[in-house]
Image (cartoon, rainbow over the protein chains, first blue to last red):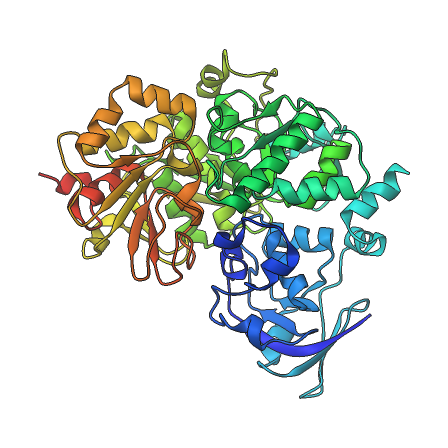
Amino acid sequence: MKLKGKAWKFGADIDTDAIIPARYLNTSEPSELAKHCMEDSKQPDFIKRMGKGDIILADKNFGCGSSREHAPIAIKAAGVSCVVAKTFARIFYRNSFNMGLPIFECPEAVDGISQGDQIEVDAEKGIIKNLTTNKTYRAAPIPPFMQELIAAGGLMEWVKKKAA
Amino acid sequence: MPMTITEKILAFHCGRKEVSPGELINAKVDVVLANDITAPISIKEFRKAGARKVFDRTRIVLVPDHFTPNKDIQSAEQSKLLREFAGEHGLTNYFEVGRMGIEHALLPEQGLAVSGDVIIGADSHTCTYGGLGAFATGVGSTDVAAAMITGEIWFKVPESIKFVYYGKLGKWVSGKDLILHTIGDIGVDGALYKAMEFTGETIDGMDMSGRLTMANMAIEAGGKNGIIAPDDITKDYESGRARRRPKFYKSDRKAVYTEVREYDCSKLEPQVACPHLPENTKGVSELSHINIHQSVVGSCTNGRIEDLRVAAKVLKGRKVHPDVRMIIIPATQAIYKQAMKEGLFNIFIDAQAAVSTPTCGPCLGGHMGILAKGERAIATTNRNFVGRMGHPESEVYLANPAIAAASAVLGRIGSPDELK
């Protein structure tokens, strides 16, 4: 699967309250949550300016804080195709694999890619290509169990398959 | 092979003699927890998977505590989903308004979380139960949906960091200050994916309330869990309370840690975490120039009776500063009743503080004390991210209950020692 879009760069320790503020958590409807994606970050108008397929690039510890799955849901429902970060906070990492938002750890790509660059990600191989500068980066390999989850179509499908 | 307490609990729950860090395991869970924000997604996923039955109706705990008593129509709809699901499956541990409390104060109090357990919750502060010597960690709603069906969850066995605290704590210094100081030292991802094991003579002498506060904020350093080996203090706390037989584990003397960090607590002054990350900690004396508009005592971090007693001690015979709103939120109904019995409410109300029914409320900017643009709060809560308690241009400073109470009287950040 090839994911393609424009790069949006965010800093370190982007917390789940920045991704989807708690004031909007009185619903779990993906389309409603998407309207407020990244609203309390330094790019509050992200959702108005981004396009379908665009890619979030962030420094270390992306998604720290709350366990709210509303965070990866909001990002996915906004149309973001994947998130590349130097590191991810633990629960966000888990949630993304469980509910099917592709994420990649690649510090070099985060440092080497600028806001607005055109990016293409080969999701299976973890190869991140900057089409603007023609540079290529390789993300940390996805652990085998996570690949199993992705192949099954998320945790619930994996559980169903196991129970069958 | 020598093991840590975390490794021993996980090994037992996956039916093995030993496990080592990095291994992927499927562990049996003792308790599965969710709240009014996270359970709706779990319930949807549970139904979508075509599941008919939960794995054990006594081990799923649902606590509507975040936006309750329902703050608006949408929140009421979310709570209703929980209520209906609990009824449909005959869940024995659904806590309705009037019986509920903030989940992480409620579960230990009700003896639903006990030493040696593996507990998962769709709430990041589930790590609180590590204070009892349980392995407890926050997960997402989908994880909870899967565990409600199977009674199991996948984990990567975490590496452990050992924190050793020694020295006698100063008068207004508590577990909250130790954990804030630790997060300030290692940073908000200093324990990413790791177990934080809190040890040392200072912990040995700490009451259960302080221990739960410390484990509660392990997530604020990125930790998978925080844990304290159970002892006589734990035994006393659990006696007459635990609904299952607690199991005491402790780390082997030769257990392996990625790191050991030591702290001399004898000279530590009360700590305050400045906006907008819990790692921005300073001693309270460095912040006396910061004016505040609101002070909150409550939350899963510091809403227990011990916290309210400290706040009352500071507020007794004093008045909240005219420019400050003070909001006090006992974390559970039992704490509320106990505080009432001890006359703490008289002290709070005479001091012109507002007392609320249990709710997470303002901690996550839900209700019961939202900040306007440019306003600043000091709070005994656990996060001070941008917009956490309201407007994105408001600010939250994190502190212990003594500092929050003293600051409410002073109208600025300060310590009880500064009060006349």
